[in-house]
Image (cartoon, rainbow, N blue to C red):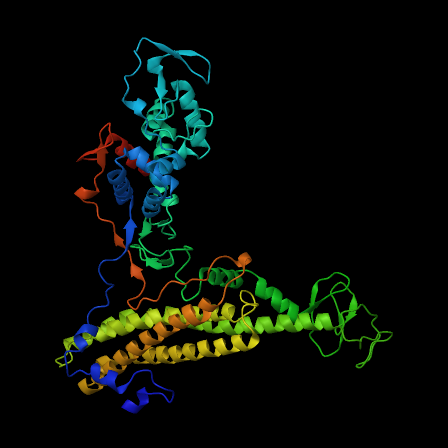
Length: 568
């Protein structure tokens, strides 16, 4: 194969300077030929069953250190602010401590340090109006005291109603949140199963109520959760290998927005296009209203119910007819609405078929090219076993990684274009001229990316293990240059989408929020690293004044948390 065969007639997207940079004669290739590994210091973490408590303690500790609170008070504040520590601190700075506590239902009263009632005394419970010994009554942080029986029944009802994460005091107009340790102790005496349920709810509130944490949507479920530190518009790879969109928990779908992908997946899944086909190719019988397909040239058609009707207008007729007319029937009058609807349905169907054809073609290519990995590893092993001056084949692995990433982006660019330049989402956002101009801009970039991806795929399939050294160098040059060019084109496409397309339109209120997409990452979708459990992750315990005392092993309460999680 000659070198000229590698270069198509269309414009190439790498320059001669780039070719020089990636020649095999200098050390410049060392950086590129390194293994295809995501960068260190990932901002996303995998939370397993074992690290869930540590992850929760990490946020609890930050609040406890700043506000000098007991753990259950810190948890109450965090649950109220959906475990957003930064937002909690913003409220603290802007509206001060008293407002922060009152809004979340946290009561830290001076009466807590007062002496308890004598054991022999009695009090009257304001709920059941019964006199009970003081040791059978409980006073909450807010100062309200009721008998243990009433407290227990109150807690049981709340837990069964799914309100165990924020159980308020029974007193009228009191918004204070009850101490979780008191709740656990009272409920466990008579309902140990509900106490476990309560513990599980508290533990899982870190995931269920936390906008920065979501369960991995794998099926069957891997048991992991993912925590992000920055923008929720991102794509993540769990340690189980599943790649997904953090915001909508669907498969990774950029450059489609979440709404675009939701609509596209539904369109491909349901029968909407079947309905379109029926609209285009059939007409309803005027008697039984079933769709009838015409299978001949005559305009007098007959339904299986026996009704004859005119194909041109859909009106019921008799059966006597000639090739040019039907006896007693004339339908020459133009019915504009029906014709418009039929033409629109036909146009929409053909438009969908066009975008779906390319989307499916690239999706199928991804499946086929995924088999390349084993084949290429075998070729590399053969090549490395030869006595050759080309000993480093990292460019093959990097090229394959680039092919997979770019092919995925290319496949999802077609659903994006379907909605970006259609009438479903942005009908009133662009004039016809603006839409045509932006569509041309996008399609030029899409075609450039497509051409380079196909070339890259072609070169990676070359039997380089059978080539001489000089020919391997040529293939290596092409793979490296095409990989760089493809990466650049992906960046340009994302920049065009974010700034020139989605950045210039505002979707309607009915269709949801801003169409933001996950940013492009040259290294690929970020793989979340597992949250480490170390000594610093062990919980802080506070004295009666709420001040941190020491790092210790998990308490009995925390062990109950993990036991409840295991039972779940």
